Image (cartoon, rainbow, N blue to C red):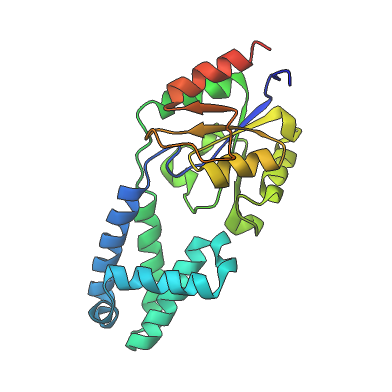
Length: 233
Protein backbone atom coordinates (compact mmCIF):
# COMPACT_ATOMS: atom_id res chain seq x y z
CA UNK A 1 0.00 0.00 0.00
CA UNK A 2 1.38 3.42 -0.93
CA UNK A 3 1.87 5.61 2.16
CA UNK A 4 -0.58 8.52 2.27
CA UNK A 5 0.01 12.01 3.53
CA UNK A 6 -2.13 12.23 6.70
CA UNK A 7 -4.67 15.03 7.13
CA UNK A 8 -5.28 14.53 10.86
CA UNK A 9 -3.46 13.14 13.87
CA UNK A 10 -5.50 11.89 16.83
CA UNK A 11 -4.22 11.01 20.30
CA UNK A 12 -4.88 8.91 23.33
CA UNK A 13 -4.13 10.93 26.53
CA UNK A 14 -3.10 8.91 29.61
CA UNK A 15 0.38 7.36 29.25
CA UNK A 16 0.64 8.89 25.77
CA UNK A 17 0.80 12.63 26.57
CA UNK A 18 1.65 12.22 30.26
CA UNK A 19 2.37 9.39 32.76
CA UNK A 20 -0.84 8.55 34.62
CA UNK A 21 0.07 5.86 37.20
CA UNK A 22 1.76 8.18 39.75
CA UNK A 23 -0.97 10.83 39.25
CA UNK A 24 -3.80 8.40 40.04
CA UNK A 25 -1.88 6.98 43.03
CA UNK A 26 -1.37 10.49 44.44
CA UNK A 27 -4.98 11.47 43.64
CA UNK A 28 -6.35 8.45 45.49
CA UNK A 29 -4.16 9.15 48.54
CA UNK A 30 -5.33 12.77 48.60
CA UNK A 31 -8.94 11.68 47.99
CA UNK A 32 -8.83 9.21 50.90
CA UNK A 33 -7.45 11.94 53.17
CA UNK A 34 -10.31 14.25 52.07
CA UNK A 35 -12.84 11.52 52.84
CA UNK A 36 -11.21 10.89 56.25
CA UNK A 37 -11.80 14.53 57.10
CA UNK A 38 -15.35 14.88 55.74
CA UNK A 39 -16.76 11.35 55.92
CA UNK A 40 -14.63 9.43 58.46
CA UNK A 41 -17.19 6.60 58.62
CA UNK A 42 -16.23 5.71 55.04
CA UNK A 43 -12.44 5.63 55.58
CA UNK A 44 -12.78 3.71 58.85
CA UNK A 45 -14.49 1.00 56.85
CA UNK A 46 -12.63 1.29 53.52
CA UNK A 47 -8.93 1.63 52.76
CA UNK A 48 -7.78 2.97 49.36
CA UNK A 49 -7.36 -0.67 48.25
CA UNK A 50 -10.84 -1.63 49.48
CA UNK A 51 -12.44 1.26 47.56
CA UNK A 52 -10.49 0.17 44.47
CA UNK A 53 -11.71 -3.43 44.92
CA UNK A 54 -15.29 -2.14 45.26
CA UNK A 55 -14.98 -0.32 41.91
CA UNK A 56 -13.53 -3.44 40.27
CA UNK A 57 -16.41 -5.55 41.60
CA UNK A 58 -18.97 -3.01 40.36
CA UNK A 59 -17.35 -2.96 36.92
CA UNK A 60 -17.54 -6.76 36.81
CA UNK A 61 -21.24 -6.50 37.65
CA UNK A 62 -21.89 -3.65 35.22
CA UNK A 63 -19.33 -3.82 32.39
CA UNK A 64 -21.10 -1.00 30.51
CA UNK A 65 -19.59 1.40 33.06
CA UNK A 66 -16.20 1.01 31.32
CA UNK A 67 -17.23 3.92 29.07
CA UNK A 68 -17.41 6.31 32.06
CA UNK A 69 -14.85 5.61 34.77
CA UNK A 70 -15.89 8.76 36.62
CA UNK A 71 -19.45 7.48 36.92
CA UNK A 72 -18.08 4.10 38.04
CA UNK A 73 -16.08 5.84 40.80
CA UNK A 74 -19.12 7.84 41.89
CA UNK A 75 -21.54 4.89 41.98
CA UNK A 76 -19.04 2.80 43.98
CA UNK A 77 -18.57 5.72 46.38
CA UNK A 78 -22.35 6.07 46.78
CA UNK A 79 -22.49 2.39 47.79
CA UNK A 80 -19.63 2.87 50.28
CA UNK A 81 -21.33 5.93 51.81
CA UNK A 82 -24.63 4.03 52.15
CA UNK A 83 -22.96 1.01 53.78
CA UNK A 84 -20.94 3.18 56.17
CA UNK A 85 -23.96 5.34 57.06
CA UNK A 86 -22.10 8.50 56.02
CA UNK A 87 -23.74 11.77 54.97
CA UNK A 88 -24.28 11.55 51.18
CA UNK A 89 -24.07 15.36 51.00
CA UNK A 90 -20.28 14.95 50.89
CA UNK A 91 -20.21 12.79 47.74
CA UNK A 92 -20.26 15.81 45.43
CA UNK A 93 -17.32 17.44 47.23
CA UNK A 94 -15.39 14.18 47.20
CA UNK A 95 -15.81 13.85 43.43
CA UNK A 96 -14.79 17.47 42.88
CA UNK A 97 -11.66 16.90 44.95
CA UNK A 98 -10.74 13.81 42.95
CA UNK A 99 -11.31 15.68 39.66
CA UNK A 100 -8.78 18.36 40.64
CA UNK A 101 -6.17 15.83 41.78
CA UNK A 102 -6.65 13.54 38.78
CA UNK A 103 -5.92 16.43 36.42
CA UNK A 104 -2.66 17.42 38.14
CA UNK A 105 -0.69 15.81 35.32
CA UNK A 106 2.71 16.79 33.91
CA UNK A 107 3.18 16.11 30.20
CA UNK A 108 6.26 14.17 29.11
CA UNK A 109 9.05 16.72 28.62
CA UNK A 110 9.01 16.89 24.81
CA UNK A 111 5.20 16.86 24.40
CA UNK A 112 4.27 20.60 24.65
CA UNK A 113 6.82 21.74 22.02
CA UNK A 114 6.03 18.77 19.75
CA UNK A 115 2.29 19.53 19.87
CA UNK A 116 2.98 23.08 18.68
CA UNK A 117 4.99 21.74 15.72
CA UNK A 118 2.48 19.03 14.88
CA UNK A 119 -0.40 21.52 15.02
CA UNK A 120 1.39 23.67 12.45
CA UNK A 121 1.47 20.69 10.05
CA UNK A 122 -1.96 19.08 10.39
CA UNK A 123 -5.15 19.02 12.45
CA UNK A 124 -5.05 17.37 15.87
CA UNK A 125 -7.73 15.55 17.84
CA UNK A 126 -8.23 13.32 20.89
CA UNK A 127 -10.07 10.05 21.53
CA UNK A 128 -9.96 8.96 25.17
CA UNK A 129 -11.55 6.36 27.44
CA UNK A 130 -10.41 8.41 30.44
CA UNK A 131 -11.72 11.57 32.10
CA UNK A 132 -8.83 14.00 31.85
CA UNK A 133 -9.94 17.63 31.46
CA UNK A 134 -7.73 19.27 28.83
CA UNK A 135 -8.93 22.77 29.76
CA UNK A 136 -7.82 22.27 33.37
CA UNK A 137 -4.54 20.74 32.14
CA UNK A 138 -4.03 23.61 29.68
CA UNK A 139 -3.57 21.70 26.42
CA UNK A 140 -7.10 22.03 24.95
CA UNK A 141 -6.08 24.75 22.46
CA UNK A 142 -4.05 22.25 20.44
CA UNK A 143 -7.03 20.07 19.50
CA UNK A 144 -9.89 20.59 17.04
CA UNK A 145 -11.90 17.65 18.39
CA UNK A 146 -11.93 15.90 21.77
CA UNK A 147 -14.08 12.77 21.98
CA UNK A 148 -14.40 11.01 25.36
CA UNK A 149 -16.06 7.61 25.72
CA UNK A 150 -18.11 8.95 28.65
CA UNK A 151 -19.86 11.42 26.33
CA UNK A 152 -19.94 9.20 23.25
CA UNK A 153 -21.29 6.10 25.02
CA UNK A 154 -18.81 3.65 23.45
CA UNK A 155 -15.19 3.07 24.41
CA UNK A 156 -12.04 2.15 22.49
CA UNK A 157 -11.42 -0.32 20.83
CA UNK A 158 -14.99 -0.02 19.45
CA UNK A 159 -14.53 1.25 15.86
CA UNK A 160 -17.50 3.62 16.18
CA UNK A 161 -15.63 6.04 18.47
CA UNK A 162 -12.76 6.31 15.96
CA UNK A 163 -15.18 6.80 13.06
CA UNK A 164 -17.13 9.46 14.98
CA UNK A 165 -13.92 11.40 15.71
CA UNK A 166 -12.91 11.28 12.03
CA UNK A 167 -16.37 12.50 11.05
CA UNK A 168 -16.18 15.34 13.57
CA UNK A 169 -12.84 16.38 12.05
CA UNK A 170 -14.12 16.02 8.49
CA UNK A 171 -11.47 13.47 7.46
CA UNK A 172 -11.74 9.97 6.00
CA UNK A 173 -10.37 7.29 8.37
CA UNK A 174 -7.65 6.39 5.82
CA UNK A 175 -6.40 9.99 6.02
CA UNK A 176 -6.11 9.93 9.82
CA UNK A 177 -3.44 8.52 12.14
CA UNK A 178 -4.09 7.55 15.76
CA UNK A 179 -1.33 7.63 18.39
CA UNK A 180 -1.61 5.66 21.63
CA UNK A 181 0.26 3.50 24.14
CA UNK A 182 -2.11 0.52 24.28
CA UNK A 183 -1.68 -2.10 21.55
CA UNK A 184 -5.22 -3.47 21.81
CA UNK A 185 -7.29 -0.37 22.59
CA UNK A 186 -5.31 2.12 20.52
CA UNK A 187 -3.46 0.33 17.73
CA UNK A 188 -5.83 -2.55 17.00
CA UNK A 189 -8.88 -0.36 17.67
CA UNK A 190 -7.78 2.40 15.28
CA UNK A 191 -6.68 0.00 12.53
CA UNK A 192 -9.99 -1.85 12.84
CA UNK A 193 -11.74 1.43 12.00
CA UNK A 194 -9.50 2.06 8.97
CA UNK A 195 -7.02 4.52 10.50
CA UNK A 196 -3.27 4.08 10.60
CA UNK A 197 -1.89 3.66 14.10
CA UNK A 198 1.34 4.67 15.81
CA UNK A 199 2.28 2.79 18.97
CA UNK A 200 3.76 5.15 21.58
CA UNK A 201 6.02 2.63 23.30
CA UNK A 202 8.06 4.61 25.82
CA UNK A 203 8.90 1.59 27.97
CA UNK A 204 10.26 -0.74 25.30
CA UNK A 205 7.37 -3.19 25.77
CA UNK A 206 7.11 -6.32 23.64
CA UNK A 207 4.85 -6.45 20.60
CA UNK A 208 1.79 -8.69 20.83
CA UNK A 209 1.19 -11.41 18.25
CA UNK A 210 -1.24 -10.35 15.56
CA UNK A 211 -0.95 -6.59 16.20
CA UNK A 212 1.29 -4.66 13.80
CA UNK A 213 1.47 -0.87 14.35
CA UNK A 214 2.11 1.28 11.27
CA UNK A 215 4.97 2.81 13.25
CA UNK A 216 6.43 2.56 16.76
CA UNK A 217 7.83 5.61 18.56
CA UNK A 218 9.51 5.93 21.95
CA UNK A 219 8.91 9.70 22.26
CA UNK A 220 7.10 12.62 20.65
CA UNK A 221 10.40 13.65 19.07
CA UNK A 222 10.37 10.34 17.17
CA UNK A 223 6.69 10.86 16.34
CA UNK A 224 7.50 14.31 14.95
CA UNK A 225 10.20 12.85 12.69
CA UNK A 226 7.80 10.13 11.49
CA UNK A 227 5.02 12.67 10.75
CA UNK A 228 7.46 14.95 8.88
CA UNK A 229 8.42 11.98 6.69
CA UNK A 230 4.74 11.18 6.02
CA UNK A 231 4.07 14.78 4.99
CA UNK A 232 6.50 14.31 2.09
CA UNK A 233 4.14 11.86 0.35
